[in-house]
Image (cartoon, rainbow, N blue to C red; front, side):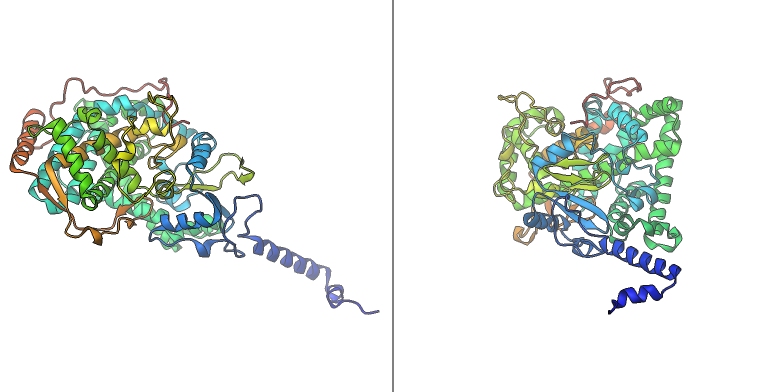
Length: 564
């Protein structure tokens, strides 16, 4: 009787050799199963052994559109296997609301972000922290010193910076990008540290912008993703990995910059010379909570880092909208002229009286979001949605661009139309947390954008960001005509960057609408300098009487901010 060759071969092997052979076969099978999509996960494109869908991951150019196209093929919730790690993409407002908002407590963590969080941030950047007692403390602190009431108190800082921004553009309109960057950075620095940024040439401004761009790009780079997809790579000595060395260099420079600024603000707080700002409150927090200066420096620096770039980036999107939709610009200017007139500049008090300008703000956030894809959320516990399993620790990513470009929610989505929001009177925070805000039927409509995040990861600087954007847009429309030689040459869907997105360079010409307005801009800036700033240093020496330093109590209620 013939004996199968395989059994004969095994019979002739020694016991140890047989065990090694079987172990090798077992490990090979296990290896080939890496990258395979479990059947109970949301569907997705076909996978390859070991790679999963890594070979299908979009490149850096218009990644948000590539993910959107995959969603059109595989559904509003689909899975990409990146090695053995599931990446679950969401492209539906309903699913985003159901998971990230309504189940926000479970989706409040972050997946493993080895390069972004552990290497480039040493676990100290709040935006990248996983859910933990430390993150909960940060969330509580930020609510106390960044809530709507406190943000409104800092309106004078925003007003003064908007006046310098107008004068800077009036004097050198070709450098409008730098002037917008200084404007947003100076607001952030004044609110957080108590000092102004006088010029784009300030090396501290350039450092914070450069670091933010680098960490955002590094965090989504292919090498960084590989470290998360194949954790065994994390055992390689960091000195041998270029991506790890780059992360360590970013962390070193970040700590130096943040710590220098924090210690300066803390010293002024303790000696009583600081202007009203977050550092004054945070010094009290540190005394109560007992955390280190490095931790405090990242807590403060994270606010400045994000605020310095995203507001300026969003303003570039607004300018792109104005030059490609001149009819919208004209209508907005007509509204401002009717309400404000020619003899004064717009203020934050004009917010309720300028519904079309508010519509321009909300439509800008939808039409060209400065965050096209949210940083991944991660479930704390396994979840099930419509029969699909969403494993704890997996990456759940919301494609903001896809939601904003949904033709069912926004017909003709690439048309910039502020009238989409003509009946919307709620703030961005009220919209995000589902507050009906006095609507007739008492029911809040779906969110029109997720730019500021979702659930308990909702950006706590949302109040300040909205007010800064409104003021900057209203002032620029009041003072300037904004144009471009050939609007057809601008690709309005070409947004560049990693986690933060900015329109590709385009030609923009900014000129005063008339000489009278130019004189009003100059006069108002001079008045504010004379009233509030030191004539030599140009720093605040006097603030309005109602601008008080925020105190902190750990017993204060968190309220409902950032919660579903």
